[in-house]
Length: 606
Image (cartoon, rainbow, N blue to C red; front, side, top):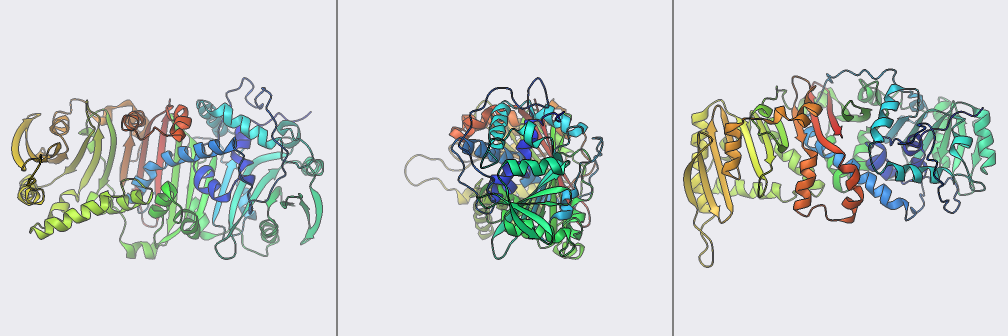
């Protein structure tokens, strides 16, 4: 009797990587996307509805990927956008993580099979391993969570359609032809080729080699001789295949033969590489996907790209970096992503870039309903790196240069800018609060000396007024200074031009700076705080006691705000909106240690 068919999620996580461009697999899909799950009555069968078959196409070499068909391109763009949104929190919190010891434990049962790393060359730029073991509780939970995404049926249908056209000479049925011989894991590696090129290697665990060989024969794979006494097979489009250990290796000839070299002991393996071992240490046992980027991989695969991959590369890349691992696990509320970097201890110590750990407390004063809160110890030190990373993604690219020019202008007015920025040397949080009109920006910082902080801020009023003089002609106003009573505290208001004002107050050991008096009042009154919000407790309720940074996003409100401001009017957002609407909140923490760094992102999925 044939084994039961695999759920479409297995195929979605593995086989598309064989034919899609390597850069997309690492930076857009395989690194951070949860394997999709099927909302079908029989959970281990592909969708019952008939699927239209595209023209036949062989298993093509990853080095020369084919142009994507028009129907598949929007789905790939959709998955890249979802991955990018999930990484927004990583971009912010990773800036404050110099090293981490993960505190949260996992109860996900047995760890996944990871033997494929023993057949990947040790200098690989990137490696992704997906658990396709349907008997693992973690995989079952991942299927259940992914089934909540409205776009899953479309993705599953596309995957099954692609799997049905692997062989050049015949149509392939996944449940009949592939599932019976497929094992418990699938992996993709991007190898370090000559110059700036990369080559990809796919490894599929084989549980029945006779059935797998029969599949190759039936799908048109022809014998291509042997290498190191290992039989080679190939499709007419150029992909080479070989059985290496208990895996079927698929890729271009150099990649497949590199796997054979490793298997023969002629080349070191990734599994034996010290940087990989350190980066992968402590991975949660309930993961369903894990990935690895070497230092060279970060610099070659992420930094040269645009958008969020470039921002992530900017934050991960540092002189002390040895390698970074990423893992995806199902969570009771949705999903959890862990990023762990191994650092050279000597270089990490010399760089002095680590952020000291602290116990977050400002969620207890930030107003309930806040759209965003980024909490860190030493905002004055972390902000430049966060702004630089954000700029590389195309987000708020002008903020950093604007602040630099403002600092230079204040210095020319005699202001000691270092004294001013030292106000944010202790715990500080940046937040956004929704209101009836425009959202309000709030910066809250702990201050050990209220009188000194009050004096330093007061000294800014005159220099700021001189930098924003009233226009000599036309509408406008001269800067105005006012003291206002809000929320039982005295707030100082500086109106610079029509519609632009800066308000601040110092009280109860806090300094609060806001773009509106309502922001200060919300902090001063705090009848209900962000720390009591259900989304915050769901994503950050089990955080470590001490962290180096913390991020919270009320994702539902963030989407509504983006819609009101016109940031989501494009076709890409409209295609992605049903899935994004299922994400309620996002929480992220990082914690510092001596020679490691980790950030953990939690998603609450409705």
